[in-house]
Image (cartoon, rainbow, N blue to C red; front, top):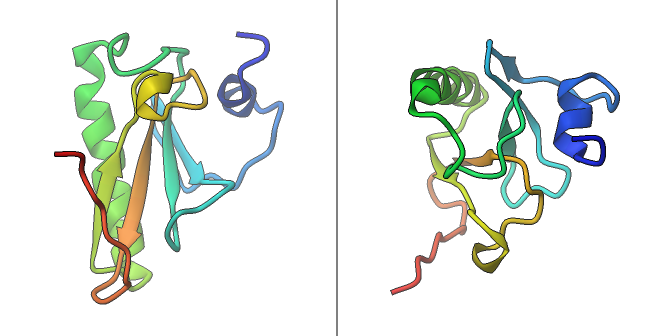
Length: 116
């Protein structure tokens, strides 16, 4: 996808500070962080959202989450949220499958509010 910013990052056309990488995912800091340490986990292959993501990539995704969590815990975070938006009506801005890893600290004042 020529115009996809995440494809450009994956292919090295836009430099980022890689936090983690495996065969199918790359992780780097979010350009507009919602929490300290906010990290994006992006598929290396272009998928629009999780509806396109093959189930076979689930293990690689969990490996990425666990590895990033270990890094963030060493940095002093206590926990984390994983958020993923599918389609523009749900807040997806970049149409390339990605997950938000939001490191958390006790008492950080951030509250994840889910729609009832």
